[in-house]
Length: 400
Image: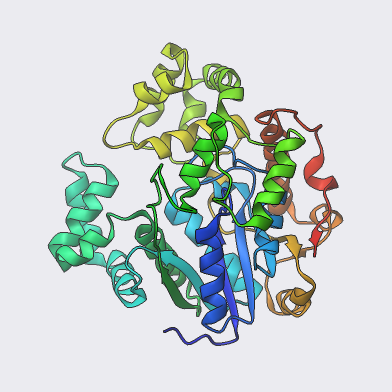
């Protein structure tokens, strides 16, 4: 078990939506000695590419009512980035909050094995090996697995076949790369897999819950009662679910309006991919067709989705070039007051606890805040009854 240091556990999450597996992770952290649990959570758009099912405010409230002490926002450029950048942004913010332990789920449940793999992936031999595999035309994921298999054997390589293991390794890589002192604590994932569309009793993945909600099927009992109550409230007032189908033509219009060189400036675009994206945008009449025309074994669907939604949101590669420039509080429980004082006293980032704080940031921070505001305004258009613009700054911090 990890040395829990100061008793502050940190979790990087999307909670899209918050389900029983997430509640089990929070409970395990408490059992392991967490005195306070801080969450860095994606905002209105998520890492898989696309809008979160519920707003960041609703999801933050779900987390607080189900055991988290404070929820902070992972800003849009990092929330919508590939796994490495996503993990770096989240881990850095946890360190600024003052977390002594980084807590995550994994299929293997072995923090030592995941840490050893993270160390390997940062080594020069791995870098050379993966370059050789990429030169053969493999996707990065396939090239990485083959390189690890050659250097560390089958057990290490097999860890990368599971999505939670893979993201856990990225968290640990980020901690090593940034020199963060947080200790790892992992909980073995049980029940349906990350992408599993089926449920097992009251256990279901976020993927399965999202699918049921969007198809109008029964999803009741798959979330904690406190979270389900919030979900019902949001659904009843037309603030959810955010459905990508509602903005499909808008997405295509945005893509068709981009010149070729604008595609080249989007995040995650390299190696001439802009030419393929440009051509696909001129031919496709549906989002599915666009992704099908652009997809190759080198470019997985999630990466293409992120690129497409980055275009809609006005994100460019340089927006996530560094680390998040501020720490924004979305909500907290009264018990978290000492945690907030510690973050304000010891962190190197501005701690934004009121919307007015966001207006007094430096240039980089203001750019990110503007992107967040645009993301919030556009997220509303994916919902049944869109809220007016300006909700991102007018919504107060959640206090429980």
